[in-house]
Length: 171
Picture (cartoon, rainbow, N blue to C red):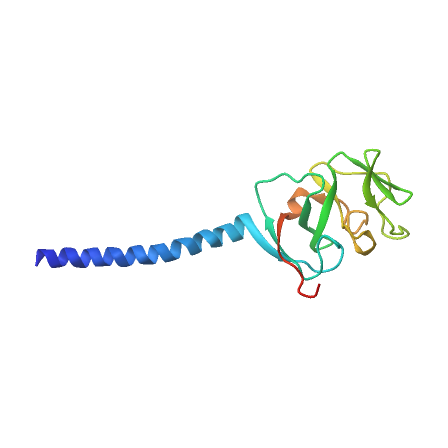
């Protein structure tokens, strides 16, 4: 009879191991997707041709410092936006002859948007711990060039795009 009790205990431990082996991976994935990674579906055309409306991207929420050229998902103008970093804290941004310059050096980004309303005053100095972000499709982007968005403080950053998971099915 002593052997039977030990068999029952062994079976119970086996069941516990099965439950744990199923639950623990789900907990790990939940933690990673809640705090480390995220999935975002692009809305709008401001990042074309890099990203299009309906594309799905994977973002890294933590453990990085944004740099020039990074694509960020952040809150701007009260809702999530996806934009490229062109300036960091202390940088001076200017727009002349449809070219965007950072600290006096021209970038490869051309700007064809008229700044008759809601524009930040140029030259513009990016605040400390903040970023100047612009959509790749400058004619369809509301971004740091507009006072309704301005520069993006690091607390407004949701994550850095690290991978395009799925393209728009309509492409």
